[in-house]
Length: 303
Image (cartoon, rainbow, N blue to C red):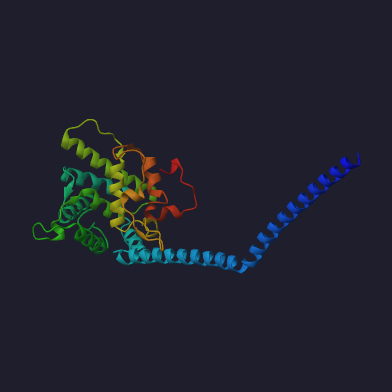
């Protein structure tokens, strides 16, 4: 019994020693880990601060790149918002009703949907004279001419004599530019633009003798119109700026294309109604005439 008790005591004592040693090892490991953390606390702090500083520098550089592009877009704009507003006020007689009359005559004069700027101006002057006499003309028209000269320079080719006035372009481009003189609220301006694209549809229908075209407009037409609005200074610079795939060492930016500004999950041939058309033009990605900055929510009755 004494031997058994002695053996049991040694076993118990050995287990306690082993447990004590394990606890001691665990405690030592925790202390080593703790000591390692505290010993490198300064380095960890510097790494965190360096990461924050690098992130701020990268963000700041990206912002500078964006602001630089925005300044460039403002510099190359042929007309500034003040000139556009002045032109609209000066043409207070050019109401939506008058514009629709001009639109119809332009439609009849150029059934194929294309003409030169000179031909367009002659047609518009003739239409306006028929409405209110020879004295009725585009006020501050030199601003519109200045704009179109620059637009046509970008589109002119080496064919012919290279004169911008002889460059044949879609009538819709010239009509979009002419809306700069339209004396109306945004709702009527959007309706007029929609009717311009509907006129395009009718001309295409007559040209190809097709009866399958809808009375609405297509996404392809809408994107073309957004491109015209870009060219004629009717979109704010900020909404035209989109990021590129270059993100390092700093985010790079570029001027967005109509496809960038009008993302669409369907196809270019999808037909949209007036409400969808107006919603896109007022969206933050397009923001025609700065409408996306309005606090009031756009509703269907605003169409």
